[in-house]
Image 1 (cartoon, rainbow, N blue to C red):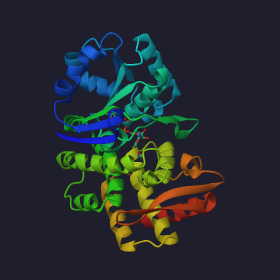
Image 2 (image 1 turned 90 degrees about the vertical axis):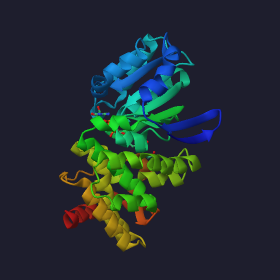
Image 3 (image 1 turned 135 degrees about the vertical axis):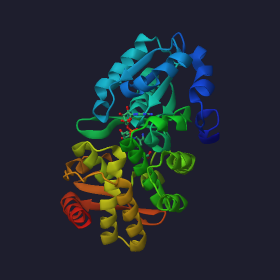
Length: 350
Ligand code: NAD
Ligand code: GLY
């Protein structure tokens, strides 16, 4: 078992635990507390179908609300349906929301917990690789709105994150690849992780990926600890995301695959505009291509990049881009130039 902490002890502290037997050892002891208005389990229909027996065995009697699975349901309608279920279940200020699922469940559940009675505790039980290495850690919660990813959100750090490798056994390859995308992003910022990924024979081997989960959490926690509200350093975690989010909104590819495409294309802009280590960027591009594997490049529609929340005023696009092993910079370009250069990078690389 490995344990990480973010925040001040006793005050807004997140305890992140990587452990096996999460249902019997960590959730079952909470059952009494969750009954009779003390809590709700929030999940999605896929995860509910796969883990219904464990939920019933260890948390039987606790209300369960399952949203339809998928990014297209990460919206205000689902958020308000969940808030309604929390009201219906009689949740109080001291109640807990258990978000059992991938990043979509974690983001919607975390936001509902932030809003309900101005904030109740949230326990994240991430069931995808992506959620274990990235989205469950750090307190960002959100829903998509008006065609913009994560437009409505809040920082609401979970009281606890419980990451169990058992969930990875049922994950399809598409979702393993998605988590791998965020791990490659972490690798671009953390040289020891990069070397492990580069040295892998099979990047989608679930045992190899599960072994790297604690190191990824430790890396992300180290960034969030220093900059919980994204005032500076935490922007490094947006590497590949401006283009990635635009591709995600227009293509239906998984979040992590889109981050890989974003990293691949934006690294070309980095080399063109900044003093970058081209040899490292070449290695990064090779790793992104290996990680993308058989995933097909979608037609590019970059309009979503203009709507990215990170842009600030004007019609420019702000990108966090890799420049060398473990280093990143912010690059701002007018939208027209950005779209043209990304298009050129796509033609050269694919
Ligand atoms: P997801 O939650 O949609 O899960 C992907 C699919 O896997 C879904 O169909 C889900 O039902 C299924 N699934 C979940 N657990 C499973 C399991 N154990 N076995 C089999 N199937 C399972 O997607 P995701 O990739 O986990 O998360 C992506 C979301 O996370 C995006 O909305 C993205 O914006 C968000 N995100 C948030 C942060 C953050 O800091 N808050 C960081 C990165 C990504
Ligand atoms: N995934 C980006 C962040 O947590 O800041």
